Amino acid sequence: MASTAVIIVTHNSAAVLEPCLSSLAGQSTPPDVVWVADSGSADISYLQAAEKKFGVGVLRFPANIGFAAANNEGFNRLGGVDHVLFLNPDTVPHHQCIQQAAESLAANPAAGILTGRLLGYDIGVRQATGRLDSTGVFRKWYGRWFDRGQGEVDRGQYSSPEEVPAACGALMFCRKKALENVLVAGGAVFDPAFFMYKEDIELCLRIRKAGWTIWYEPGVAALHGRGWQRRRRRMSPDARAMSARNEVLLYQRHPSPYILWALAKYAAAGLLRI
Image (cartoon, rainbow, N blue to C red; front, side):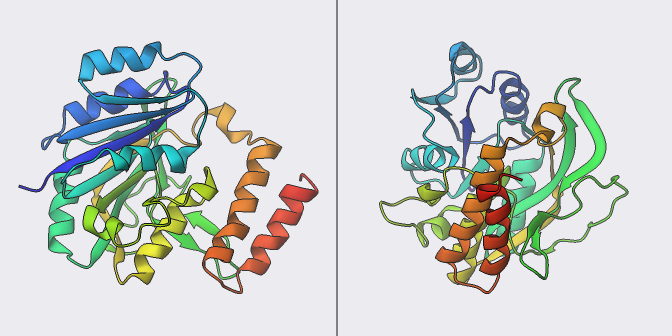
């Protein structure tokens, strides 16, 4: 049977980590190993509690080294597993998520990365919102990347398995040998220059250039808290600037006329601060 490792990057994630780890412990096919890579949490007591309760491995970094770098540190600790699941701490996979993802990858040998049907999750009350969060990441004709279906009422749309342009980094179920095929300098999976934002898309573009596909499997389902907390809807100017800067960097790494859109976005968010 194929083996799976899970990597979760945390940063002050005390409010969301336990439901995530509980869902992994209750999987029909539990992961073989779980690494929690903490990037500079102010209070690490919740990590110590998780380590004791769930038996996960914890990597602690006193400073915030970024989402990409922390995932890379977790990846560097892996042994000879077949699959790697990069999972956000505010994501709660359904109990057959890992099993169905592994079966889907086995049935699609060209797929290097698989993503699933992410559903909105209200962390405050710990229940689904009834709306979609992501069914794959797509690109507008002028260059803007977006999560398909985000915010739509879940009526069962986007219910067919298919190849998609990119996968949301909240749930990326990866074939390890595909990742090993596209490592950047220093043996990193995610380009550490991105810190956070767009690093998932950049990885997907690298995977596709190497001849692999990105696969959307709607039967692989999970709840995701992103965007359903009011405080996260108010993105700071610094965060908007970083996201815009990374979009420019994305098209420097993967040259495209879409860089014109990215430069305009950066001028607005990064320079004009709007």
